[in-house]
Image (cartoon, rainbow, N blue to C red; front, side, top):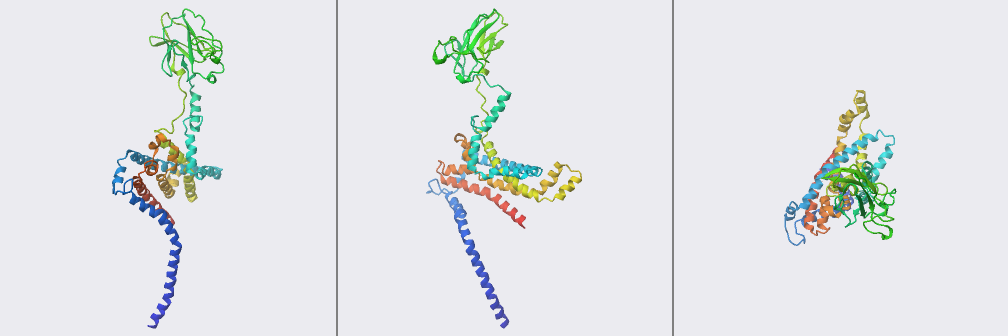
Length: 444
């Protein structure tokens, strides 16, 4: 009996100490729990409850908002785009990160290279969105990507000489906007032809252009003429005639057409004159092909309906490639070097070592990186909202942007927006649980 009382007396201080420790632990954890409840638990519960009511929040609709999601074309398009993001972006990022992490091990300035690739992570999505919105501009004078595309295109293919030129109305030339343009009346060999055009800015006339001259009298097998800017400085002169001060339009391609077949071709000289020779007797139409007036190449419409989602994914890759590379590089540093050296001594090529040793040993790291990127991609908002222009915003929307637009961006239907937020949460949670379990396993 005495022993029992002694044991109880000794146990009481220990129990009191444990209770004090538990109370102290709760005291320290309580602020975090309150913050977690206020910023995470309460919003989730409130959003779920709100999703059961209509737009005004007064009428209970149950699962009506969730049923409306699968019937709304814009929401279905957002789900489709989100699926594209989840499949494409993490896969490309993980692959790029793996390749770059392996290559940087063989680069002398590996640290500087990693720093350059990781720098975009220091840029906010807002700033990155503005940068790429400008880079994707359709106008080559503003969009750097289209400036490069136009430069490459014009290197291999000549631009049209006079894209803005149009014939002087009522002076013997017919044709729709952009050409081709032809003489209204038939022309015979030996007849002179004057082809007057307007709409050419003074700065667009080639530097080698000289004053236009009236067409000379051609031979019996020749049609001679002049292509000129029918506008004299100061507006003087008579429309339809070659006046002093008017310049020729050199480089114009001119054709003599008979029965739909081109019989002769010539190019206008510095003074705009041309000669179509070797023609048989008969009537011809003098034609200026549409190639003379084709609009200049303006590059790729990166932000059009067809390419806007791939373009935004490209911006996302620019921001997050450094993140994937650094994480995979950290995993690569833990691979035992003796395994790689043994494989090299056995005659394995670098490609075989990469496929059969490096990738399998990095599988846990690659999985964590991939799942982390999936979680991040599901929540992408800033880039889509900033880069996509208004007319194609719906084509680029993902679940996060659709949720914001429905709730606050003009839809004013917070019931439907809350349903979208719950759907997005349910899609993200499995990936988060998977990642947490992976981290726990790696910790043990």
